[in-house]
Image 1 (cartoon, one colour):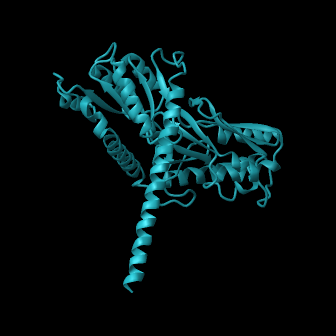
Image 2 (cartoon, rainbow, N blue to C red; image 1 turned 180 degrees about the vertical axis):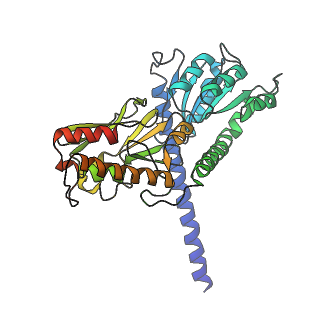
Image 3 (cartoon, rainbow, N blue to C red; image 1 turned 90 degrees about the vertical axis):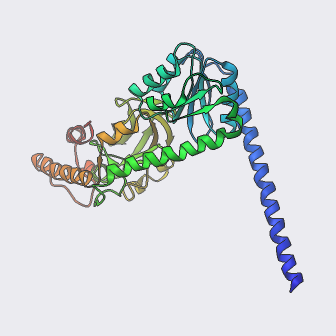
Length: 368
């Protein structure tokens, strides 16, 4: 009995040791891969985007961070620490450049020194929050700084970190703020959904736009987009979909995807400004499945510039249901006006001529 127990304990210990060794090996490999990306990125020229910009982008980063300080040695050290810990990092020495970059890109955090090449940290903080209140700003201070970091927190910074302690506490510091940021975003979303949780036509937590694109906000802030049930009732099985290019920066005037049906291109404009981070190209392999599971088969993902703006412009819950029902009734009336007898067993678009098709597309899918 004692022998058997000893063997079991030994096996457990060996298994734990093996797992520890494997985990450490994986961590080492990951760090080596990140170091390679860091080294390669620092040889690239991003001056066409911003004159002092250095950019390191990882796949699936924990967060996207912009750091700005006049001290280039500090930037190099902080960039290296953050990238090796799993973050995508942009860095500049100019506060004006940093402010411009926050208008063009989505960052979870901006780390700014008390002094950049042309602005103080306080000035930059105010400029960022004038246009991008969704970005969290963290102040980097000197240990012997005469400035009071708590004064900057009163001005809108979420926290500060002192330079001598960066090595010891940086990763834990950022991870804690990521958790707080996600919790804050989730609370804001829940507040929006609170009064409209019962839905018949769309799943809970989803929203729709007035041109019948649905969206779902993921925990990381990305948004999945697809076509709602009304769209598939109209189009049926589409011929194919063209996707926006990955990493392209979209405005609300740009198509986020293009549906092709009956030799016609139907452009669905982006409901938000931001960068395209994923395209679900696999749905092209079985287009007949799309109408069956419209809210599962997403089309693309966007990294939005401003999540609050999107939430303010779309329809959730009962409002979304009511909007879809209203358009269904309007569509019935339009078909009557066109003197069309529609076979309920077929999609609507296949029973229309080109003129009728384009008229109804413009009426229901070109709204903003």
